[in-house]
Length: 391
Image 1: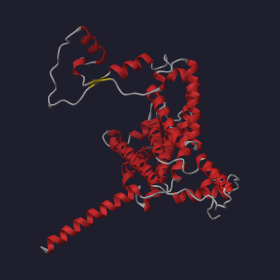
Image 2: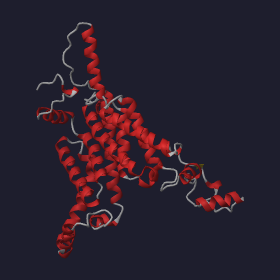
Image 3: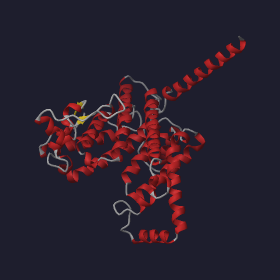
């Protein structure tokens, strides 16, 4: 009986320790300064990307753009959604029951009666605003909202409006959708649900100003505005973003393992020697490729090293990033990987956005030291979060 009681007590202690660790991970109050830094960096990327749409707004999002509005509306209202079958066998083919059923089968490749549902839940302002003048007005308004979100003004409101604006651009112009939009979307989403305006923001400066005004009216002398108060919501938003980044890297690495190009080391070469992505218009780059091809051992060494580094990094990211001893090694590897992607694939904005998401793993103390360093470096603008901190 004693042995059974000891085993039950050990199991109970183990479960209790796991629950305490889970609670500490998600619900320990955290400094919102990292969220403020990520909001500024992500906001600048959001502004740049959507400002670039201004050069060809009508072709991206206009009713007669590259992806015609009529085709998009048909897709989001009529496209079939098929659920899983109830058995392992393919259901028998059915003949069309009417001319409408035959027309639907020719258009979508299946009978209307075989679809479980119709349409896709896409949301975009550009489905409804099609007049060029009003499109430019709305485009300018959304850019202004993104700017306000970047500087942290009415962040709770502008965060939601910025996220909805991003969805409007993404879900209308799906021909230009790629990884940058996905990472930008998820990062803004977590900034929206977290207190990203609690630090390094106009909201905080305004709170400081009104606090001093009210103190003067009451004849009070208040101490300097201290650092932002740690909150559970700040920790929850950071943790959600961190976990999502881990899933992104692991899914990317696991998918690479399914193809032979990463096992035999030819995948890096297919990006480095691709006219569409790589900088093959530069003579020095072509000479480097020719030299590597002329020396087989060098080619094998370079391609195998790049492939192994990429696979180990992406598959190992969610396992090593949480360890304090290996965290900076993993972050440095992320910088190296995305530097290579920016150079050899030309995906500069995607690489920058991924590094913004990875910066969620940088501890608050590091951000404070970095911001304090820049403040001592000669800037005359006092940041609200550092007021009251020792010089």
